[in-house]
Structure formats: structure tokens, C-alpha cells
Image (cartoon, rainbow, N blue to C red; front, top):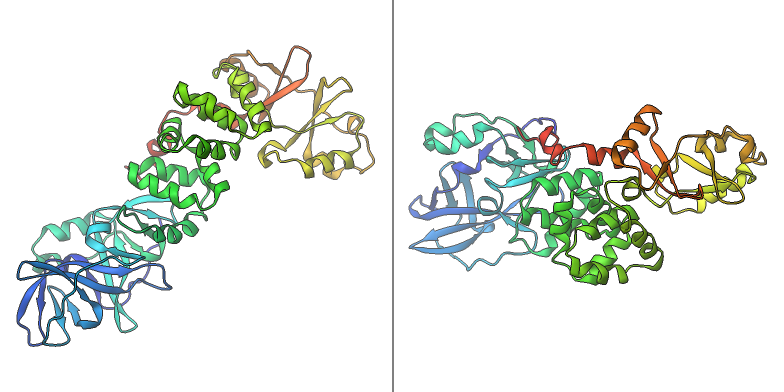
Length: 424
């Protein structure tokens, strides 16, 4: 959770404004305040840009420049003449009651979903702005009590507005440009956890926002559970799904394809890039509960007679994910597995030293048909973070990593179950 901040002076709670009177410059009541509109996307705290009001049974928009003051229970006009306009939401505007109050927000700093039980306003730089949200029980209690009593209840769990971001299906697409840079600061697993904890519409908004960066979108999909992967892939056309899968790791792509309806799988596979298509087809041929179905076909192999410099050059040129490069797989002239050499050992070695003369570890290996229990036991017994999978000719065809095993072992919904999203 973001750290509690010092509140600016003249804090006013939104609940004390909503339902309050709209009064003219002489204090006479003209109508009722229904909602408060703020503009997002600028620097600093979002300013109030207008109010939704009801006057003589007609709901209208009141621009902020026609308001003299805002106080508990009332909004006062600056002029006697009332000039109301039809409301049309402008880009980057949200309605605090309709879009934010009682809705979930993304606490970007804490990578959590929180609920806005109250919204805090303060007068800054000559006008009222949103400065924070109250996510605690006190905020909800304040709204249940009469305003004269509720205003005496202090804020509970206050979050600075700069650390949160609201959802709204009604907000124009321009809002996604605001959300994306904030989400881009989070790890893909944190973003996936937010999607899994959110409603479908909220999750869709997050996915759309990260979609501005296709690589980040693929990373997030890799972290989603199967149910949410399918949920956000099934509404896309086959070429769109294939484009997403091409950017995913082959094993993750194969897992997602296996979850698609049978009638779509082959059509999507045919649209993959050739190299990805070959890897995915191979993985789909294995039982998902065995080593072949768990492994990634991406790894770096070098011949035993190669020099350390040549091996490092191969590492530099590979597109294999960083987490799969801790160990380099050493093979002989017939491509048979010899052992592994640590990347750190290659970096420290004399560039002209032969790989076989370095500290090559003859670690145990698996066959593709090895059952999950055997995979887990082998990795636990030998304290391995990765284990090679060999074919009948002792050639490496893939690698099972510890995260592949953990994904099977951990229960569904484990992020929420262990409180990583702030759920009780």
C-alpha cells in the first residue's frame, strides 16, 4: 500500500458535496448537485472542471468557471444568472460518483486493487482538486450517517491520488493513454494479478491499456491463468490471436492454443511465424502432464570444443529469454548432451579456453514422457532450477524450469489466496 501522505488544507469529502444544494449568488436554492467532474491526464492533482446538477427536474452541466465556491452541502454560483448546458463527456474526464466512488481502483504503487469508499478534495492553487481516496471502512461509514455527523469522522486509509488510477467503461479510449504508462512500471505478473482480480470489463480495460506495447501485452498473457487467457483471447480474430502468440514463449503459446476451442486451433497455428509454428506443433504433441508438455524448447547449446568467447557470442545473439540463460547446455559433435556450464563461468573464463575444459556439470536429465511427479522429485533431489529433456538419441529437445513446476503445484487463484492483491 502506498505510504500515507500529509493532507493539504481545506480537505472536503465528496459525500458532503453530492446531494448538496446548488445555490445562486444570493444563497437561494436552485437545484441539487448530482456529480462532480474532474479532468485527468495533466500534471498535479486533477481539477474539478464542472458539476452535474438537477434544476427543475432537468439534469444539466454546470462549468466550473461559473462556480464561486464549494462547501459542505452546497455549491454557489458566481453570478445570479444560471447558464446550464447539456453534458457531453470530454476526453480525459471522469465523473467522481458515477465512475470512481464505490468502484475498484488500481493502486499502481502497491500493484493492488482497492475500493474508493470516499474521495477527498482540497483547494489547491485557487481551485478544488482531487487529492486522494479513502479505502477504509470509515469512508463508507461517513456516507451512511447524516452529513452533520459524517463530516466529523476523520479519514481512515488515505491513498494519495497520484498512486491510484480509476476504471471506467464509459471513459473514451484516450484514457488508455493515461493508464498505460502507469501500468508499464509494474512487472507483468503484477499486471496479470490485477486482471485476474478485476471484473471482466476492468480486466479488459487493463489488457487494452497494456496493448499499446505488444511485447508487454504478450508478457502479461504469459502470466495469466488459463481461464483469463481464453477470456481475453476468444473475442479476437484468428490473425490477432496469432500475432499475440508469436510474441509469447513457445511453451506458453502452446498452452494457450490448447485451451482454444478445437475448431480454432489449427487455423491459429497456421498463422504463426514459421519458427514459432514448428515449436508449438512439437509441444502440442506431448502430454501436458509430462516433461515434454512442461518444457520450453528454447535454450542455448554449444559444442564442447567451442571456446568461451564463441559460446558468449552465441549467448549475445540468441533471442532466448534471460531467465533461460543461467546455464548453457554443452553438446558433443553428434549433438548428444554432455552437461551444463554456468554463464558466470563463461564470463570469467579465458576467452580462448575450450568449453569442455571449464567446470561442466553432468546434471541428470529427463525423457519427454517423464511424469510430473518424477520431474518435481528430480529437481528437488538435485536442487535444480532447470533440467534438460532428452530424446532417445540423448539430444536436448527442451528444458523444464522451476517456474514450470511451480505453476502446476500452486493452487488456482493463489495470488488472491495469499493476500497479494489486498483481499482479506
